[in-house]
Length: 369
Image 1 (tube, helix red, strand yellow):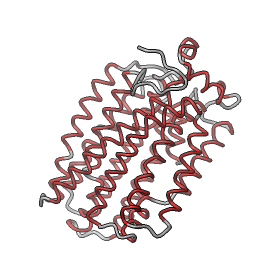
Image 2 (cartoon, one colour):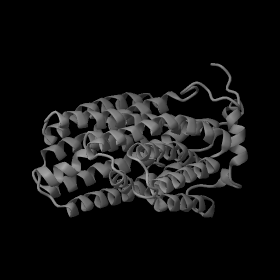
Image 3 (cartoon, helix red, strand yellow):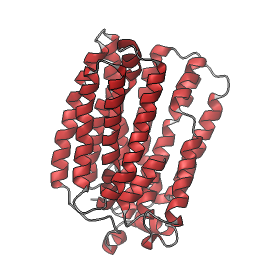
Image 4 (cartoon, one colour):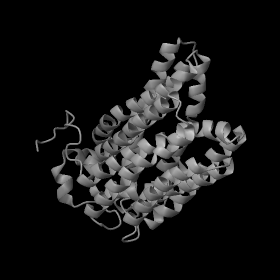
């Protein structure tokens, strides 16, 4: 493998551990399946099952609450020896099982229940998976590792959304499209079993050996940017919570994407075009995630998060102006850079802030944000 300089980005995925690549492939196929379902839930709940808009609001709110509460608990469980792999496996398996059950629902309240159980699965797997990625990766590569994973995750959303759009536009019933989502879900489950079998069991996340730090030039920059006392910190205390609450504030101050999509319609973008624009947003997110992770490893996570926040502010301000439909779509797609700049940076920061009790650190971060 060629040496990595500090001035030029490496080839994509250079040095990324096999465990991270495997988990990225699992996320790709899982999001493939998920995006065949999520964009169609409003039409299914309101159109097919006769539910109300209030039911949709309850569905989203209950699902988010279930995921946040579960992440808070599962993060602590992920730090127990031998618990990470079962949490990841059960979390993904529940998603594979719940999506076909949503397709079989005969009432709107059943969809709400199944969706909540699906999000419980997400809450179980996410802290353990992110802690496993942090454990498997030297500090100087963590931005790129999380960026690679997020790139695959967003890439999986693209074919899922496009296939769902194509099937519905060719008169396939929504319920049937939801049922077909089990296929990429089963592929994700099969890959996950192989990945977890090969992945090291590990212990509660700690700093990797000093040799790994010395071999990676990015690690030196990561170390210089680390907060004072980070070697002795974990997911408690001011050293951890001050940055996490700042990240939560950034999320809180962002406009919901549903409102931004509504703004596109106000600016003259046709409703039939919205699913394609949504897929395009994931293209930008996927393409920008790995470069964003490279920036994290070379500029530090705090500066990269700040760049992402600035990008969102500029795009939101632009959407507030009077734009042509084409210009509005271009500005909306630029929002994909926000995820590329912030997602891997936030995760790398949490891994640094909580070298011990890393699972609890990711659980708290995901739950609060």
